Length: 95
Image 1 (cartoon, rainbow, N blue to C red):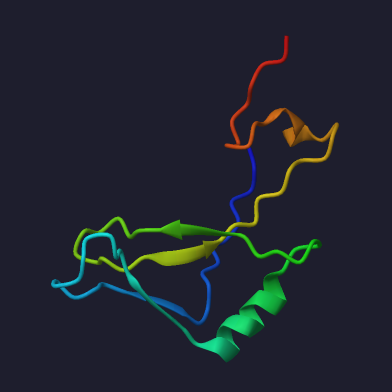
Image 2 (cartoon, rainbow, N blue to C red):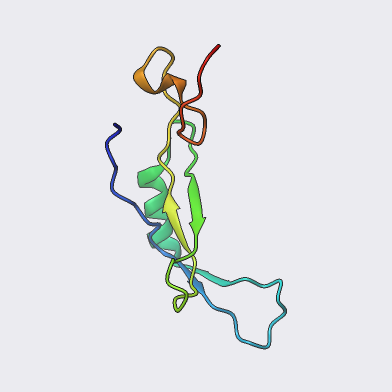
C-alpha cells in the first residue's frame, strides 16, 4: 500500500464566490497575493519548472470557495513497484 502524503494547498491564492448578479459562466473571483504565491511556486516547482495543481471544490455545500491542492504525483520509474499503475493510480493487468 502506498504511503499517504499530507495535502499541500497553494499559499497566496484565494477564491471568492461571485455576487449573485454576475453571469453564470463566472465561477469564481480569484485573488493572488503575489509575494506569497511566488514563494510557494519557487518552493514547489518540479525538475522541469512546473507546479501542478488540482482545482477542488469543498465537500461541504455551504462553502462555495474553490481551492488549489498541490499535485505531487510522479510517474513511477520503470521496474518500480508502482510501474503497473495507470495515470489514475489504479492497477491494470498486462497481457
